[in-house]
Length: 387
Image 1 (cartoon, rainbow, N blue to C red):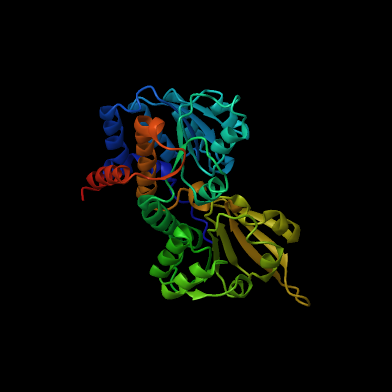
Image 2 (cartoon, rainbow, N blue to C red):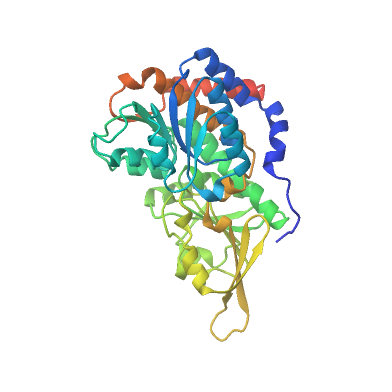
């Protein structure tokens, strides 16, 4: 593992905004549109520098913001302070979604179906009467949404949109994994044996980007349909335990909990690097790994090295590296080019603008992202790219 400290992504943002001024264009668009003027928005999200840029655009458009924290591991304190300086309220901690709901927001936008779930768990009498519509951005959140019958409000499935699936999920996360691997190892990825667990929009993008850099990629997925697609995409497909034996790096992208457990830690080869880019940090069972470890070293880039006893009869210990304690590594470390994430965030903001105008007249239940929203987001992005 290399020890050189990388330049923090936040230091690059001013330069990026000059090269890719999407949020500046979004702010002007929302201000001219006027649909968010005075609208109270409850936003459950990762509190990062990119969230700050989006908040600036929403506030310029007249929105009144109330934010709650998705994951303390991804929270940037400087970003939180800057968002508060805009006049927005930012709540952190486990009770933060409830505090946002106490502010009587009109629109909700969610990451993981948390604040919407809090709203739905209230009795009709307890729910804030102000809420008219919502949106959800994650695969795991949409899976939870679809288990609920008779939703009492319209909810836009941003995750199912073309831009979220094909740009942010596929290219943004995949590029971020490649960037992170270079920063972690300081070496070429050519010939690196990688295992990608989960072959949805995120996992397929990770596999594509690792192979594009010359990596040897094996795909693991419990869904036979996805395994078949991975096969015809040109990837080796195998079970997880078999795949781990030769894996230099393991990337989980399932949106499910405890994908990697005690048996898998024991099966991993010496020097293997594990990272999660799915929504839940529990995709990696870190408690099981800590129980197996005889020693733990803290390294740079929020990475830890765990020492485990080797095979029976061997005195040599095995080393396993885990990035960001199992939290979404690409978000914790803001890896890769940020354009895909900014395009997704612009789409999320434009969905809020759409809901402010049309939410009260939409039918209850799940809705796809309106194509006009993705068109407007694409127009702004192409202008920012000067394409």
